[in-house]
Image 1 (cartoon, rainbow, N blue to C red):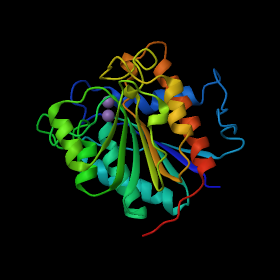
Image 2 (tube, rainbow, N blue to C red; image 1 turned 90 degrees about the vertical axis):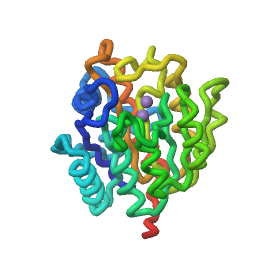
Image 3 (tube, rainbow, N blue to C red; image 1 turned 45 degrees about the vertical axis):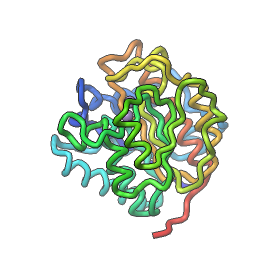
Image 4 (cartoon, helix red, strand yellow; image 1 turned 180 degrees about the vertical axis):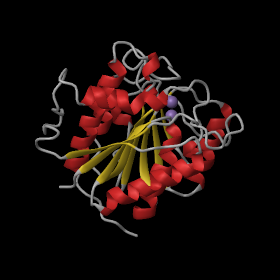
Length: 273
Ligand code: MN
Ligand code: MN
């Protein structure tokens, strides 16, 4: 079984409204290793006992997107060279572009399960093509997504609807949502979780809270039904400055445990490139 490697990406240079997500990895990591909770997963295994989770700490990022993107891609390549599977903590959602690019370099275009209140498909947001409102436009343009399925979306506007149609994005709207509307994707599978996809009552520590989101149980059902080999995952957009009683950090830590158990259960993917 593959070991899983956690690393933090403490950056918020591509946040469009309010910075603060750079402090996310440290807050989630503190909740993960805290004695307040144990390391069990709902799938059964205990992290650190039944499944190995290595923690590289945070990457030393800069204030330069191009340099940071290269550093993130290089780090994913190191992780893969060691035969491990990358699990990244954001940071703002812009980090998903180099993370998926690195996965596609190894496996070819990937199937992506994207949890978010926002489609993040802007061609260019506030004159920044690397904005955290745009990573999935960059991913689709680069041809890195075989299939992109978005769950939790409840902020769709005309521009993003046009972008979704142009790229063939499958958007599962939040209205009348049930987990069985989410397809079981084939591998290689990449999972990206923007914490604002979950309802702000359960995840207030985000820069762009949007009412009417997923419950934690709905998100777990969507994750646990996925059976394909997972080649990478991220949990992004935690903004500790807006958190209440650390509940969002504690949720991030729980999602790490569930993703690690899911990656382990679904098994390794074959490299095709
Ligand atoms: Mn979002
Ligand atoms: Mn996002």
